[in-house]
Length: 380
Image (cartoon, rainbow, N blue to C red; front, side, top):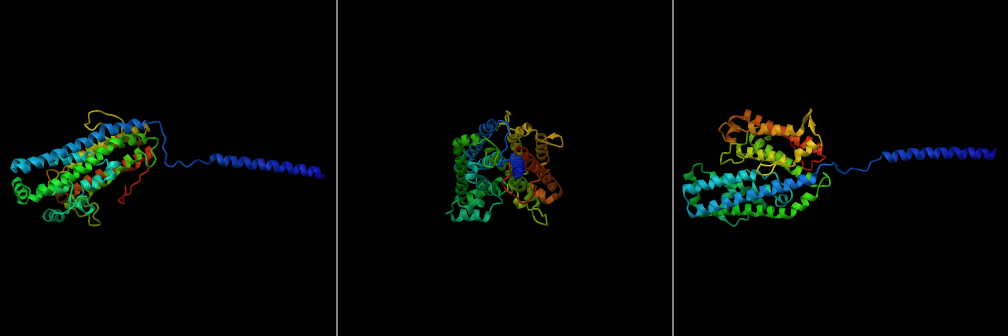
């Protein structure tokens, strides 16, 4: 009896242990390793990054710095012969160069992020009092953080267009030689920062292309997408459109026309249209000149079959970009004038810019497994 009891007990224990081991094994097999935001697919990320770097980013920066150099040349010609003709040339080249900036301003990552290129190049509204103090007193260092509001393209907008007519501009520039000196210093500062970015890309390009194993935070795809989307959301939708229109002006929603980009040159949203036009070119993987089509972020979206309500996400994004460019018309008014004289239309324009945000920031990032790493408190 004792032996039988022992055998029965041993058998029962063996069965129980085997059962428990089976359950434990099942549980272990169900546990997955944490993905750490690693999104794997067979899309040729290396080819896409190579296309973006070689065909858009580097040619874009080179084209931009060429225009900056041309502006420096126009200033030298004015300084040698200050006439209405050379003032006109200086103003015209300034506008060309500012438009060229719009084509690369959204590439705010890598070397551009190191030198805070956007903040150093195009902060607005500018502090006109500080600009005048710098001109009068001298001794300024444009590299200092407190000088961001007194330099860059918008400081030249003030100095070249504060007097609306050519004769007034000529008289102002001739009134104090330090004004032209200051303009030259601003251009030199822009050249210095831009050339740093261009020179850095000669070595950063390889690192950028090779960092393609996943779309995890820190990868080139992640860095690129976060920079481009943040630029559109904060600097284009909000900075160029929403702030002047008063969208972010608390409960009052009163327009803030002095916050408009190109305020003194009376920009008619030409700068915003230029920015969005080249953003579309970039997203579609086209080269900087827009003559050839390669792999871009929207091609990646097509590869993973990203859709919205049955439509390809790339088509939805491209359609909205077209809407934005078509609606950005001010009926002959400057944007600063329009936000005051026609606030309803101004708000409608902002609404179309806003519609693009969730397509980029939510739908495209989700489709590609990219985590948004920047924060903006305005909502999506």
